[in-house]
Structure formats: C-alpha cells, structure tokens
Image 1: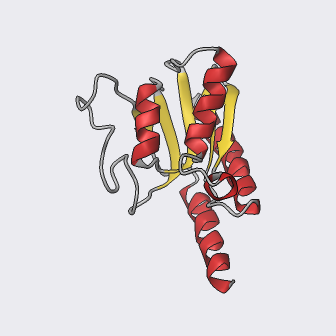
Image 2: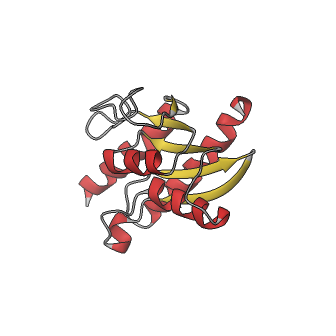
Length: 152
C-alpha cells in the first residue's frame, strides 16, 4: 500500500476542500481497507454546529457503517492534519492499524506535536504512524483558509 499513499492522501485532500467550501477548517480523511476507500469524511464542526464534526470521526463512522462493525483493525486512515486528542481516541478505540497524515499540528496534534497518544505501550492497541505526506499542500489548505477568514 505504501505506493498508494499519495493517491489516498489526494483523496483526503479532496475531502478537505469540501470542508473549506462549507466554512469549516479544511481537514479531510479517508479510511482504506485492502486498497479500497470504505469511509470518507471532512470537518463539519461549523456547518453542523457539532464539536465532534471532525473529518477523522466522520470517516471512521462511515467505515464502521460500511463494514457493519466497529473494529477497523485492517484499515489505514489517511488524514490531511495530525489527529487531535479526540480523533486519536477514536482511532485507538476503532483499532485502526495505521495512520498516514499530512501536516503536523503544533497546537492540537496528538501524534507527537503537542502530545503523543500513540506512544507504544501507552494503551493496549498500537498504531503505526506516518506523518508529513503531502505536508506542504495540506498545510497550505489550512493557512489559506485562515487567511481568508481574517480578511472577512
């Protein structure tokens, strides 16, 4: 699957762009199992007035619904931004095997930037992490979004 990291990250970026159009921070995610996307999501926190409206949560819920179970142990989550603590908890609870993310998040990142909830031995489930995939493009989406917000 490593050869497909860029393809699936591009799919997550497409989801992030949907969030920006709706006035939400552009974070997008896809859940992949056996090289097939089984869940998609993007931030809807502002649009839905829902504090749990994060792209990762939406993609995980969609994948669980698709599979008809909560265990996503053979899945990889691709997300444009390093997961926050809430999303890290959902990733751990759903037993996702691997997370591939774009930009690091020094304010909310729970994969090592601010805190590391994925540290080996911390919980009974370990997640393989790969950060910095399409980092510049993912970061630019967020920077451009906040720059446009400041102009309003």
